[in-house]
Length: 170
Image 1 (cartoon, one colour):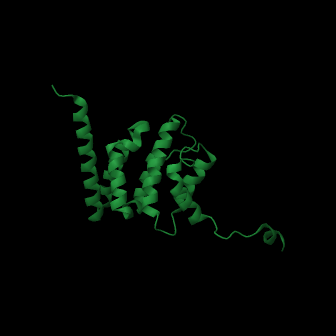
Image 2 (cartoon, rainbow, N blue to C red):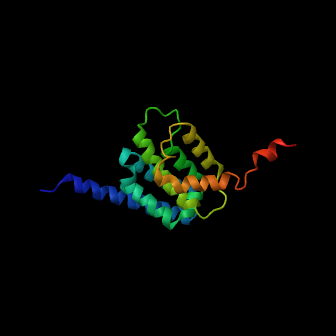
Image 3 (cartoon, rainbow, N blue to C red):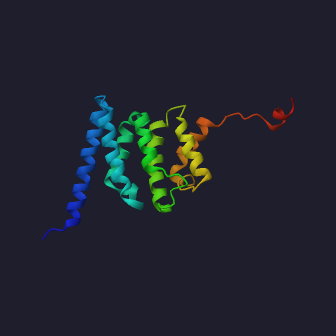
């Protein structure tokens, strides 16, 4: 007698692999609408995993894609999908903190892999940083997100701030 749990795990892996393959092919063949749908499918599967988001097959597929094709996650439509699915604003009180944190960590990993070699990061990342900084701090203080937080600071904060005396003496 076979158990349903292994069947569900195999089906989950196949679904994630198929969506990942569809996303990769659509993006490489310049079919952004198809790529966007495939990404949204993977993100929906990853975010439906609740607090175990980072451990789902969809999350695994997303992490593998972000390593293999970081430029895909630099696309405006991909960033928008990540922001809408994995990051929560302070008004999302119905979402448990553990879920917000798990989703934020996955989002940070994907975004950091996409932008780690870029000197300028998109402004939406500063918005995400500020929203979490002044709000729930669901991912900002997580050690796994430290590389992205450092990247945001390096991209948006001045490297050589003006000393306080220079600003007041004019």
